[in-house]
Length: 243
Image (tube, rainbow, N blue to C red; front, side):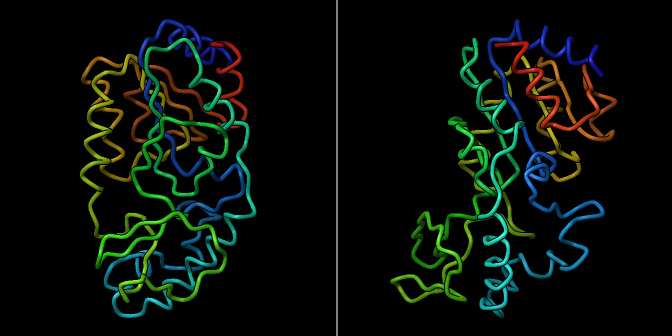
């Protein structure tokens, strides 16, 4: 593992434009349960039956019971060394640095990252699909459901099953990927699309792909450097070597 970390440090040390993509594995090290794996929330809840527009239309109170549970749990966790190392890397010697995350917990912002694209939204934002109102709200718990001033029920501003990514968010991602000298993929299973295709797109555009994950993924055979280990242990070593 150390040899590959040295390779990653060397590659990043020469990079001008870096794009990072993080997944649930990074947040899991802060204590946020993943939907996949032996400790995933899917052991108790069938999330695909709750986090979708049809469930919200049929029973918004039930959906908000689940999201209040998640918000309460996420309120109790903090950024871990991987979040902090990525925030430090952003201030490194790069012409541009973009962090794309599939996570909705806001921990990258808490760690100090600034150039963030949250492809699946943010659990601390709520929105109205009727009038378009969006607000940041960290109240725990919220009414089940909370209501907009226009009278419609508010929903979490996250991408649900059966929904597409926001066009503006996807445009920002697709603008960043072709500019990347290095694509650093951290703590993601690389099975959720379209996010799983981002690293391949960057590689096809000329980026060197570095993967950090606990176990091999579908991306591993195509990564230029693959490091198997905890993001909270690997990323601080990489950040220390680059900065």
